[in-house]
Length: 325
Image (cartoon, rainbow, N blue to C red; front, side, top):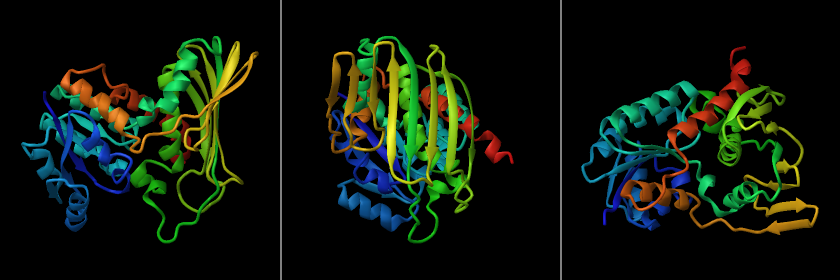
C-alpha cells in the first residue's frame, strides 16, 4: 500500500509538536525531508525528528523525487510562492493557515493547483478534531433544533513582546494582526458547521496604538442557510474570553476555539458538558484525512483550498476599510 512521503517547507515552531510528528505518526504517511532558510536549524530539526534529509532551499525540497507532497509552514507571505512551485512540480500541497495574505492570492493558489491537477489542502485542523466534530454532530443531529444565530466573542489582553514585534502582527508578513491569525480558526470552523457565509459587514480599528495592525474587529454575518451571526475580537482588552455560541430553536451549544473548555449543550432538559481532550499532535487527524484521500483509502479531506479561500474572503471584507485608509 502506498505511503505518502512528505516534505516540510518552514520547519518552525508550529511543526515541533502541533504538526510535524503527525506526518510520521499518521497511517501510510512518512516525513522524509524538511527545509528552512537557515540550514543549521533545518539540520537540527531533521536530527531531532529523525528526518532523513534537510534543505535550506525550498525549490530543492520541492524537486526532491522522493518527496510526494509538500507541507508549507512558513508565514503567510510565502504561501502563494511555494504553493505555485509545488503545483508546477505536480505535488499535492498542504498549506498553513491563514491560507495567504489575501483572497486574491488564495484564488491564484486554487487556480494553479486546479490547472496542475493536484489537490490543495489548508491547515484548518479543527475540522478534524473530536471536540469540534462533537459541536458539528450536535448541530447536524438537531440537538438544538433549527439553527437561528451564532455569536463569537474573543478577548485577549495585550502581551508586550520581549523583543521585536512578532511577525503575526506585521501585516506585510501575516496579512493583518492577531485577528487574521486567530479569528480565521473560528470563522473556518463555522463555515464547516453552518455552511458558507454569504454576506458580511463590519470593520476594524486600532485602540491600543502599539502597532500598525488592527487590534479590534467587529462583524455581522449572514450564512447562505439564513443563519445570522455577530463577532467581536479584541486583542487589547481586560481579561480573557473565548466563547462561540450557536443558538437554535430548541437549545444552544457553546464552545471555546482556543481555551481548553468543554463543549456545553443547553436545552429544556438541562445542561450537558462534553469534555473532549485534543490529541498530542493536533494536526494529525486532518493529516490522516489528507493521506486517506491521496491513497484512496477514505473520504475527502474536509479542509480544501476552496474552503480556506472563503474564510480569507470574509476576513478581507472585515479588514478592507482599515487597510484602505
